[in-house]
Image 1 (cartoon, rainbow, N blue to C red):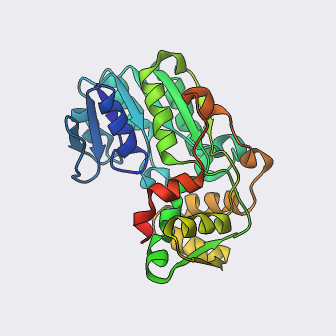
Image 2: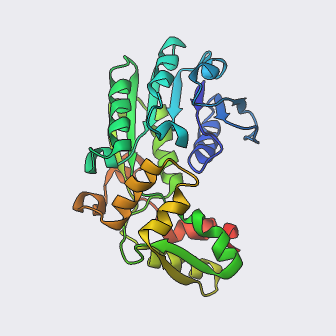
Length: 279
């Protein structure tokens, strides 16, 4: 049995499907009831209350751990989830971390994630750590304005990073859960090219077959919008990166290709597959 947390999100959905198609027994965990692929067991649990995971972890051999937003806040205790996994007899854990633990190790949320990485390494379990950079799916923040007004509103319009398709993250996670050769690996996951918000807007316009305008937000405007959906500390850390990426954050990593044997998919591919969200 493999347990997938946040199984109904942009990474969890394709990961759950891939594991099920590989013939694995899968338990999909989400905060609310949700549809899952045929043959997949679903359990409702709040990661902020790790004891509630015990029924889902019973009999599990592996755990994919993707933190909910509230577990990035100051005072959260995500290490308790690792302890529950150990107590439940889980043998392997794959943690979704962030590239920022390497590129900006002193940010508030990065320090906490580094501590969680250390907890996983010291747990006695087999482990792998995935460190993605920016997600292509963050463009879904623009979906409402694109649908209503054909406008993308974002900060730092001409500053880019190599955003990664969440489906590629899911594919790497599946490999780490299923293949022993990835045990003890820490993988930096990026897309194949640097792309700016203005460039993403052009890719969305091409997918839609219609013009889409770009409106540049100030940092304060962007922070206010982001803080409605994530801890303020995480919003600040994210804006620090997308507004002034370091050379390490602009680097295109070879790790997706090393694991999957193919290059990561470009943003335009993600846009074409998800264009209905913007219609």
